[in-house]
Amino acid sequence: MSEQQQAPVSGQTVGIDLGTTYSCVGVWQNDRFSDAVVQADIKHWPFKVVAGPENKPQIVVQFKGESKTFQPEEISSMVLTKMKEIAEAFIGKQVKNAVITVPAYFNDSQRQATKDAAAAIAYGLDKKGGEHHVLIFDLGGGTFDVSLLSIEEGIFEVKATAGDTHLGGEDFDNRLVEHFTTEFKRKYRKDMTLNQRALRRLRTACEHLCADYFRKTMEPVERVLRDAKLSKREVNEVVLVGGSTRIPKVQQMLSDFFNGKDLYKSINPDEAVAFGATVQAAILSGSEKSSRLQDLLLLDVAPLSMGLETAGGVMTVLIPRNTTIDVTFDIDANGILNVSAAEIDRMVADAERYKDEDERNKLRVEAKNGLENYAYTLRNSLQDEKIGGKLGADDKKVLDDKINETITWLDRNQSAEKEEFADKQKELEGIANPILQKMYASAAAAEGGAGGFPGSAGAPGGGAGNAEDEGPKIEEVD
Image (cartoon, rainbow, N blue to C red; front, side):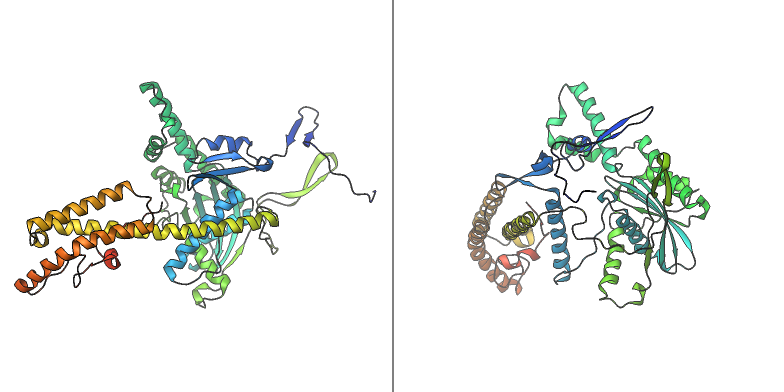
């Protein structure tokens, strides 16, 4: 072989299988905007997707009146950042490590096995005595996976896996939405697809059943039993994972398949894997020394047969499908997508910029919520005869007018700046405090003091600082 390096070829390259009866040609175009699967899914997404450099799909969003484009992995990183912030706000400490489970279509079936084991850990199935078999039925919004695990003494062995990377709750909804939009157009001569709000309402209402899709979910269940060489009777537990397993028909069909067996569904199916991932995170970090976290081991399997092509085009199988993998995997940080250093630097800079914007927006929303809580608490107290009845008619009208003016301003200025909300709260307090102080002075003389009315010194809920403590707290993210 010549040592001279081969020059790169230009243009599109294809692969051709030249057969005697059938020939086939293929072109490498995965992860492209023009993919048939991407194009089919775009019409169901509430956001805009365009073709970026090298025909890569990019997501378009509106930010401060401007159109911004992001790569899918950037959106994923923002979601992960938000989840990290939620955890930090809850525990009051900085989070530096995490275990993240991902769907099967991330092209690493080993991660799916970890996800299935996580669901079993969440139910404490690893603590049951003796060997038992657990079937994990994971039906999510876009993917479907079934795994059969054998658990004994804290060791999780994957016996078999099967599934469909393009079957889930969204497929049920999309079929129903398409049906009802066609029906609506036929009946009323209006195209409902042009009204995004109407489409959202319709999608939410689409909770009816799609019989053929549901029957399709039983096929991988039968397949894993065949591959694992187990009968239905030998399956001890069936665990539900994924929001779509809430559908009653799915639960009924699965229970009937296993001759009426009770299903494990007490944990929120959306959270079951996260519960198990939390246990796995504690084990990996070594920070938790609880005996309940010891002696957990996952033995994964090869999802596809691997072998060599020998004479005559026959494949000699070396590692059969669903064989336990007895090796250690070192997954690179860029295992899903290779990104150049320049792109990473840009993404980091963008992430920091949007983080600052998010922080400013958070303060703005908090100021709006503070004013909103204060105004509505004042209004509710004013309508209470035990308190509002003690005000003079003129004072009550002045305060009521100012409250209504503030609430009207809020309705029309939801996007105002933090300083504007603070100024409006000071205005309202400037009217409310003198009136309330006068009322409390007379009430104190007559009844020995009164409380429960915001906005006055000595009264619970006075001022912006305590507005959060009165009435329901309104959380809003613009």
